[in-house]
Length: 286
Image (cartoon, rainbow, N blue to C red):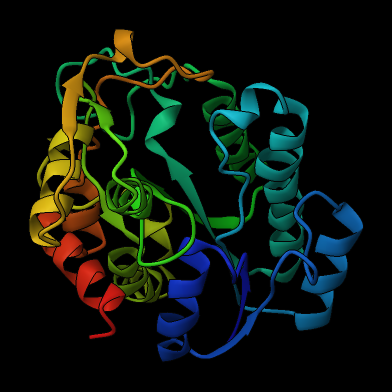
């Protein structure tokens, strides 16, 4: 089985490059080889590889910058997946596409289920919701996985930013009123192959699922855990979202209900604390 992976240099894509070979032959492409902002680049790559499965790990993920570049975010996060969906439909291929908790406004007190009505607060969330809709509208076989607060041992993410600033001796003001489940790229990559196997074997399982780490925390408590587990000293202060100004609004509740993923796909990610330990071990070269 041939698998086409987009965004191989990103956080999720790089981890998937290591886990997807358990399913078959992987052709992993970066932005220079398959540019999600270029319909011609997308079509040419898919038609060259002719995969049975397309895993779209590429995306525009600069949440605050998207407020200034919403047109570009839409080209990459909506129009790119639309073309992938059209090409997948022509081949009869399964398209695996990643989305986000930011499609919701965070006003619900309990975790969001897949059937809750999206209402994104920011341009990034709007572009990702539009991508989900484009994949479904293409008519292709699809598996859409919403995840949240993704981080890993390299790239640009919350964990590495916290450690870098702390080691520079800079004060850390981190919001303590936004709830979510930090989900490591390693945990996502470990879960996806089995989910894909099940969907390929049972097409009735295709559709939209939530896939995040277990448990919940806040950005402040996540930062505290990072510092504690690395024995890093820092001036860490909890603040409310109203005290932390950023171009893009964030949902106060980013919790996603993973029950459908557990029961239908027989896949459940471990608690976020386990994912943190795994990423820190990888950072140490273990």
